[in-house]
Image 1 (cartoon, rainbow, N blue to C red):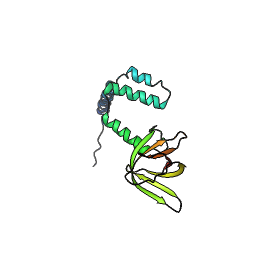
Image 2 (cartoon, helix red, strand yellow; image 1 turned 30 degrees about the vertical axis):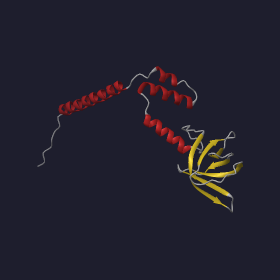
Image 3 (spheres, helix red, strand yellow; image 1 turned 45 degrees about the horizontal axis):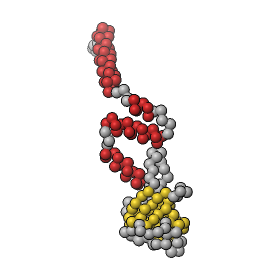
Image 4 (cartoon, rainbow, N blue to C red; image 1 turned 135 degrees about the vertical axis):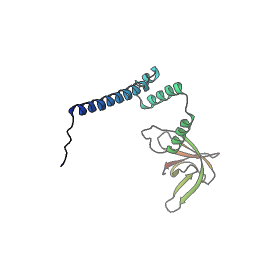
Length: 172
């Protein structure tokens, strides 16, 4: 013979109340912890929100947070390295932009048939030399070069201690 257990409605009701109360206390404690963790933003941060330009607004936020918490030197170095790596590539949404880059020529690849020259730099970048410009010197490994933006939006390369420049386009 099987015995059937009868459940007491009172026991189920007490159990449900205990579980419900436990959940309510847990959620309340979590909610209050979130409330205490949030600080009122400083006036400087609130002023930054009103700036329309993305670049200016980001600079404002950086300055306000640096003033409040101090400058993060490691982050400053990472930003410089990121701008250095991105130099010559189309500007991305981060707005990372440099106007000039100094580097050492690591290798030169000149194709006599196509008359195209590619210059590899010590930072891993590769630039194709264009026919524009008046630089007569040849590129050689070990030379110090400066790549800068031209007034027309392209890039030009100069060899240290030489006159003239050549137009360049970043390959990699």
